[in-house]
Picture 1 (cartoon, rainbow, N blue to C red):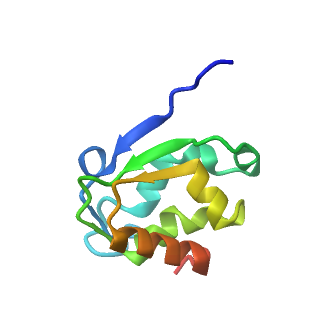
Picture 2: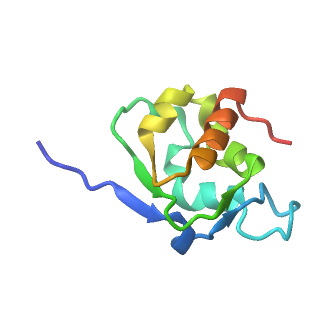
Length: 116
């Protein structure tokens, strides 16, 4: 059996340390959730991608200082159209999140996608 390397992204260093903007209309319009999702998770934007159960990517939050609910909703809850929150967190592995960061993400996953 072939072992597949799972990509790990240091979110704070490779993208941005402050994850707050849903789209270009929020805040300063930079480093948006839509941009993040398209850059790192675009392969998951179809139903077939969710048929698997192996982890797809590891998102390391060690250098992330903030994540806002609208960012979390647009990045993570977006995928509730394909899978339940438990499956999402099995395919998208979150590493080094604070309790607050993880709580925000889980709350948005539970609430479902809300394109405000």
